[in-house]
Image (tube, rainbow over all chains, first blue to last red; front, top):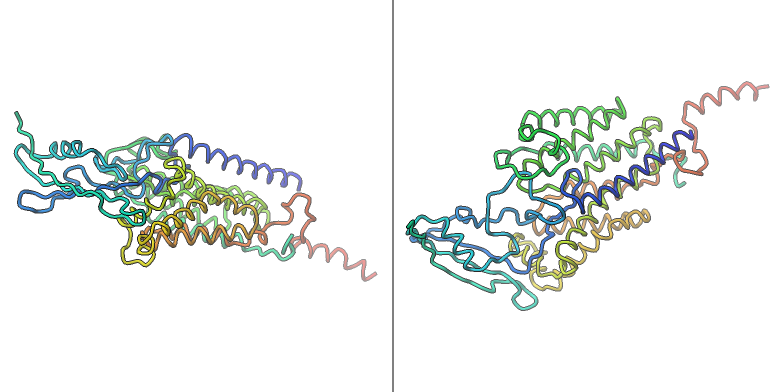
Length: 151
Length: 292
C-alpha cells in the first residue's frame, strides 16, 4: 500500500517535471514534436499585400510562377523561439504575410523571373486600416515590368 | 471525498476511449503528401534519430499506424498493460513525427493527444491494480497538459507581437483575407474594430489563463466552455477544422474527474470500500461467529 502510494506520488512528480520541461523546451529551445508551442496566428499583421500579375494580352498569371505566392497564411514559417522552419521546405517566395517589401525589391524579384524582353503588368494592393474602424485597400500600385536583356 | 463510495469504475475508460478515438482519427488523417519536397529542418524528436531516408517512408508510416491501432485495441481491452499503453503512445508520437517531418507547415492538433496519451500511459501502471479508477493526479495532469498547450499558444503571441496582438486590426485583416464573408460573425467583426478587438482579447486572455482550470471543477468547466466558444468562432469564420481539439476540451474539461478518483490514492484519506471479492471473503469469515 505504502509502496503504491509512494510510486503514485513519484509518478505525479515526474508528470509535473514533464510539464515544466515541456514548457521550457517549447518556448526556449526549438520545435521538437511532440514538444511544440502552437504558433498559429502568432505574427504581427498591420498591413497585407496582394499581388496580381497579367501578361501583355491581359491574361492573369499565377503568382507562384513569380515567387509571390503565400505559403501558409495561418502559421508562416517561425524563425523565432529557436525555430528553423518546417520539416519540408515550401517553394521560395517574397510574399510573407504581414510584410510589405519596397516596390523596387518586388519589381526586381519579378524581373528575375522574366525572359529577356518579356513584359508583365504587376499590381499590388495594400490592405490596412481605413478609418480606425474598418479595413480595406489603402494603396493600389501598378508597374509594367520587362525582363532584362541578357547582355 | 465526493462520491468515493460509489465511484464509477468505467469513467476513466470512457475518457480513454474518447481519446483513442480522436487519436485514431488523427492517425488516419496523417499522410506523406509533401514528402517529395526538399528537406527542411528536423521538427520532431524522431527527426533527429531516424535516418533521413526513412522519414519519407510510406511503409514506415503504415507500420506505425497499424502498431498504434493494435496497441490501442489491446489497451482498451486492458490487455498487456502497461506495455500496450506505452506502445500506443509511442506509435502515435511516431505517426505524428513522420507527418510533421513531411509537412511544409505544422499541425499543432497532433500535440495535445500525444501529451494525453503519455499521461494515461503513466496512469496505466496503477489502473491495472485499481479496477480502472483514476489515480488522483491523472485528471489534473491531463487538464494541465491541455491548458499548458493553450497557455503556450497565448505566450507565443505575446512573445512574437506583444499585447498589441489583440488590437483588432490583425483579426480584421485575417478575416477580410481568409474569412467566410457570408458568415454573420465575420461581417460583425469586420464592421467595427471594437468587436474584433473584444474577440481577440477574449481569445488571448482565455489562452493565457487556461491554467486557471486547475483551480477548481467550476473553473475547469468555465475555461473549457470559453475554449470551445473560441474554437467554434474560429470554425464559423475561418473554417479551420478544430473538431479534434473541441472533442478533447469537452472530454477532459467536462469530465467529473472528482468522481473517478481512487480514494486509496489520496494521502490521508480514509480507505474506500473494499473490492467486492474482499467483501465476500470477509462475510464468509464472520458468518460462523454470528451463528454461534
